Length: 200
Image (cartoon, rainbow, N blue to C red; front, top):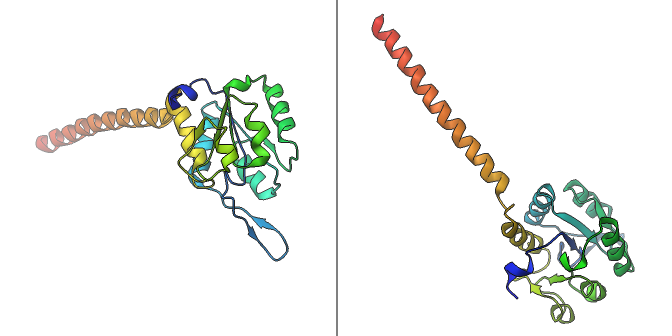
């Protein structure tokens, strides 16, 4: 199936965190606290997708107040963190929004995501996902987890449904119109001043 056909009717996109939104390697502090890295381009795409009307959620086995706050600030309201049973979380999310699983994207990278990706119509993964996950996914991003996978997938979806850069294009058109008005107004004012100067 072509990528364009695959992402044609997407209603929601669900991401895992470790290995997807963050690289799979974690930094461990002396006190045992885990530090996760996130990608700014992923963040922009997530915020833009939500603003454009696409549902975005997170289901992760890990739990980090920093991660929750980061994605809450981007507009992600449905964050299932510290989840042992991801399948149950998925079913709760689908039920809450009355979503057709065939039109849902799930992006996972490892065995805890295995059951979940079998329950959605559009399973996806990063380039460095576990082979068992890759074998089941309909789209494998050319990008490793934590380095722009969300941007890659969301951009494709939004380009297909016509919302990618729509707001930017609208803003640009408004600016062009405004600049044209200013240009004509400026010429008119200059001409008036020139006439006054000549009369004086």
